[in-house]
Length: 51
Image 1 (cartoon, helix red, strand yellow):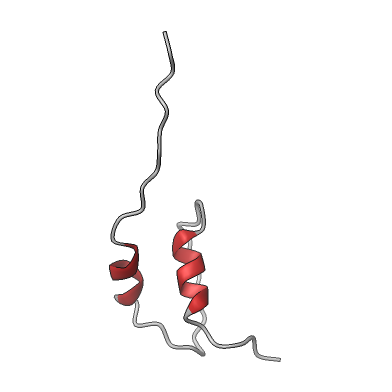
Image 2 (image 1 turned 90 degrees about the horizontal axis):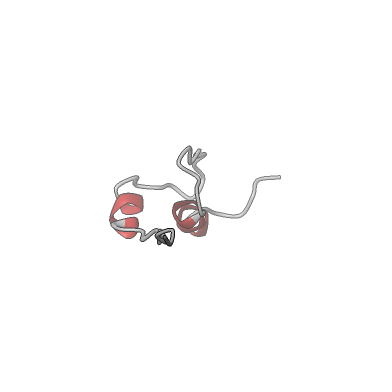
């Protein structure tokens, strides 16, 4: 008997991240971190690191 293969498909990624109204200077914690899709999109909307 074969084991079924599970393939995760991200749905509503853009809609979910857009709903966060991300500010480039904001601080955010993605507690859903799995394969990193949401985190990657959130990071792409942030400004350069402060320092």
